[in-house]
Length: 62
Image (cartoon, rainbow, N blue to C red):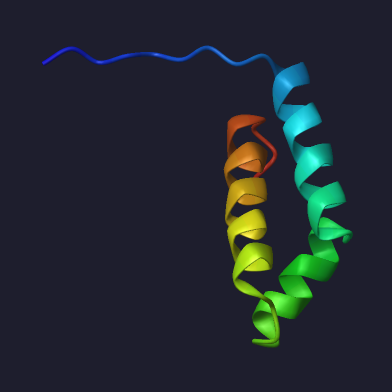
């Protein structure tokens, strides 16, 4: 079984983060609050998951 490695630049990740936030018309923190309050839509939950992945890949998670 071969493993495919996809290389993504930090610029690509930053652009993805901006697109995701624009799509849901919110900030990362606002999304977190909506998900925590259990009032987020499915698309907002998916956006937050993607934003968390981007944050991880950028090395921004503690």
